[in-house]
Length: 142
Image 1 (cartoon, one colour):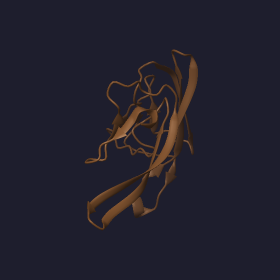
Image 2 (image 1 turned 90 degrees about the vertical axis):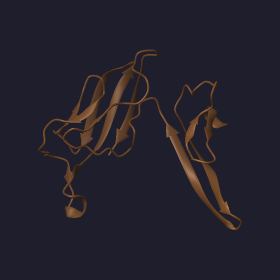
Image 3 (image 1 turned 180 degrees about the vertical axis):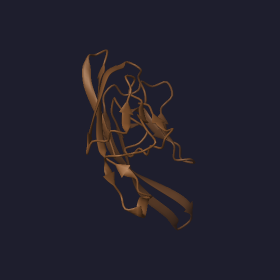
């Protein structure tokens, strides 16, 4: 199993193999998965899996007035920083890496026509330092 991962054939859930070490470096790979529903009825899909040290739950994060998003995994992160294009003054990054909306009124970012209810958006990069080993990592989201 690549990177000690396995996929549940019934549910499609990808998880770490029990009793095996988790990867110590970031990785990315693709595999082909085929679901067989009945004789002569099957569907094949390409599954892409990418993991890095610093991650949030998705590459696309949607924020509402009470929404927060914390980084996944290790609590050994410090010195968080965020850069967004265009700037989004309504998005706050805490010292623990948690993202939240600073006010109910969003301004800045890219305004979308009513197709998406007037949402503002941006592409952001969050970086942080890992305590041990001392090394900087980053992740991005839209």
